[in-house]
Image 1: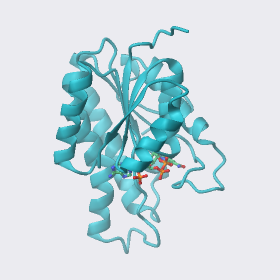
Image 2 (image 1 turned 60 degrees about the vertical axis):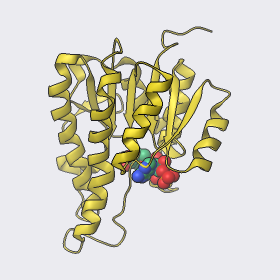
Image 3 (image 1 turned 90 degrees about the vertical axis):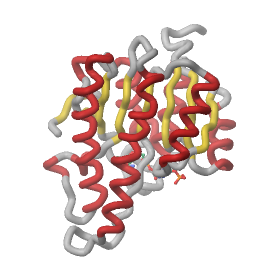
Image 4 (image 1 turned 45 degrees about the horizontal axis):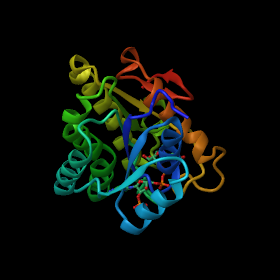
Length: 236
Ligand code: NAP
């Protein structure tokens, strides 16, 4: 069955498990072709195999915190397509076990910032030339309630600050990409049962993926630069 998203192409980071895997599944079901980015070759290939019943997913190996591999990924994508419709910056880490804002090390702060903030910025920069060639390009940054001013947690200092900075990056990117009609959103998936969220979280990965899929498929330019949860705008 044809859908209005046939021929559309998305790239999702951290697609091998958790919310990223569910986003890949949802976009494939909607009709997108998906580049599934994962850093483990075995896990990336296994995820693509599991998704094959829903559509065409192509595995791309990438550690998002590595500059040189971001460059090589763009070259790999350009060999297969001349445009990108959707970028979902989903991959992230929560490295704050047993620390708080009074004990967190500089090394840990840098690690969280590097993966959760700097990598989405750099990947977006690298993919702008391909996004520009889409008719309705959209970037979805997977943030967190911990990145909202009212949700900052002293017991998750590096994670909270990295997601707050990702929210800031979303605002800045949306401003500079507005003339190119590239929309940039930040969002929180809620508390989701994944390796990161733990088994007591109330939401399934599919439920956590819902707002990302909605923004990727229906988000407007008027919503660019804003923060969402449950398909609803929230304060930063
Ligand atoms: P998860 O199950 O721990 O999955 C994290 C994903 O990110 C994995 O695919 C992981 O790859 C990937 N990743 C981490 N560092 C990477 C790197 N340097 N290069 C490439 N991939 C990397 O977590 P999740 O719950 O699905 O979280 C997905 C996103 O949602 C994250 O940004 C998280 O902060 C956000 N979020 C989650 C919750 C929740 O309750 N779960 C709540 C709010 C926000 P590997 O398998 O190789 O480690």
